[in-house]
Image (tube, rainbow, N blue to C red):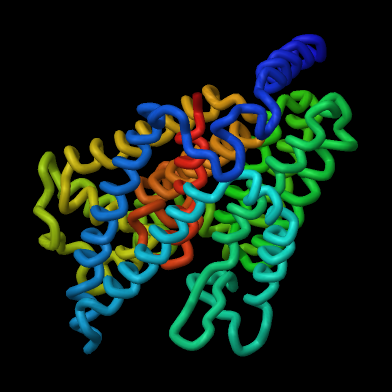
Length: 399
């Protein structure tokens, strides 16, 4: 078993060693324009991101307009906020796509330090806020954001940078695996202190995916994964209420009036969507208290009810296309740092989509994670679009 894992790790390392050093290709030099048009994957990613962003805004408006009106607010209140963050996200995506990656590498260390400092803000009195049992929000005047969203991107870049600089030491866990795991453990621990298990899982997935792509030995990587899983189980078991919430999905019908109320309502909304759905804005389960978090964690249920089976297939198919294009970009690039960033972003979004959809459909516990591009949430949308800009940056420089 040890020889097999070593062989697999050697093959992954050998594949990455074929990546050229940063700047060796003329198209990768700072300020240089690509000599040839970007590959097909670039346009595929751009189209999916554009369609998802626009459709996401439509679904947020559909999920919030009537409920906001009944509260005495403007029907456009949450939609306008989401549009503002979408505009900022498009600016961030453009900047991430146009600025050379070597410039981003210089910001990795201060970015991770800043993201770690932001993770402490929810504990500060006066600006920290608790939403849905998680003390993971910061509210400063009219602006609210979730620091863990920024930590996801900062952690990804920090891990990719370290594993790029130490590519000759991948056989030495003390110089590669342990420092990366330490950064991941810090980020995940801060998320758990905030009561946000979902973000902690995604942060761990980012770390393990980047380390795996980099060619780390499988045995210590598997041991670290098992240790992380035990930590997550211990976190859930530490609170009877949390334990009840995370085990309620085993029998949703038995807990449909309390612990699994939202999941049960989401399943009803999904079933009522039928083949073509009730039409945008025509869903009923988002009204009143049937689906309280319809605009955020459970917006997939709104998609299923209003767009039907065809809409669900289209949305999930779009995520599959995005994932496939991301994998192709990571495999095609000749730069190690680019490959780790592209692969890490792809794994990040795949894991987050699986957890969100799994929770809405009752196949997994509800963890409070957003559905990328669709859920209402400014910091989530901004970081999502900025990350897509980095993926497009890598794709446009593949030759």
